[in-house]
Structures are given as C-alpha cells and as structure tokens.
Length: 130
Image 1 (cartoon, rainbow, N blue to C red):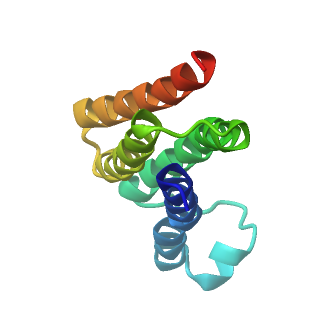
Image 2 (spheres, rainbow, N blue to C red; image 1 turned 30 degrees about the vertical axis):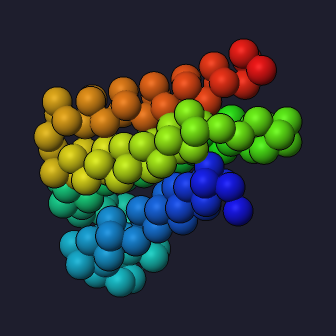
Image 3 (cartoon, rainbow, N blue to C red; image 1 turned 30 degrees about the horizontal axis):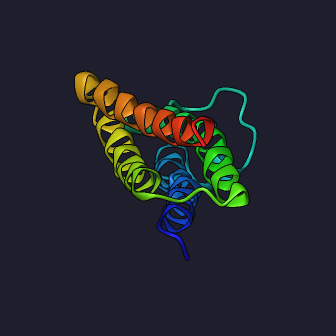
C-alpha cells in the first residue's frame, strides 16, 4: 500500500474514533439515560468535551478534502515523496490539532491546522502540476 493511502486510512480511523471520549463524558455528566435520550434541559458537557466535539467536526470537514486529494492522486497514478510526506505530516498535524484543541491551546491549534492545510495544498499542487 502506498504511504499516502496508509495515512489516509490512519486519518480516517483517528477521525472515526474522536467521538468516543466526548460521548463518555456525556454519559458521566448526564447519566446514561439522558446521554442516549433527548432531555429537555441537558446538563452541559465538560469544556474539554465541548472543544473535542468542535475538533471532531473540524477533522471530519478536513477529511473530505484530504481524502479527495489522496484518492485523486491514487486514481491518476501520481505518487511521489512530496505526496507521501505531506500525507504523513497531515496525519500528525491532525493528531496535534485534536489534542491542543481539546486542551484549549489556541496558538498551537492554529499552527497545527495551518500545517494540515499546507499539506493538502502540497498534494493539490502535485496533482495540478502533473
């Protein structure tokens, strides 16, 4: 498997698991019945869980772009060190983004998001310059 596809799988798995901690927080804060139901006045989740929910939404939004670019590169047979490196760095940037967003560290959150965006731009550039 090409490196960029490998990291696409890891980004997808990571994104797919980001909901678990904030749902566990919801159960702890609200109780199981309110967590799975629709209470009229639900207790607010922990601040870290609220931030993780936002990080998860951001990860899902960016997965669409990253996946499209990696799959387009694969379909077109474009694979090189720049794409492989960008995919690897993108994965780690998304991990850092989720962690620092959850812990409320704004400058690192913005930096990690920007690094991920640059990685997407590198892959797009490689495709456009083909």
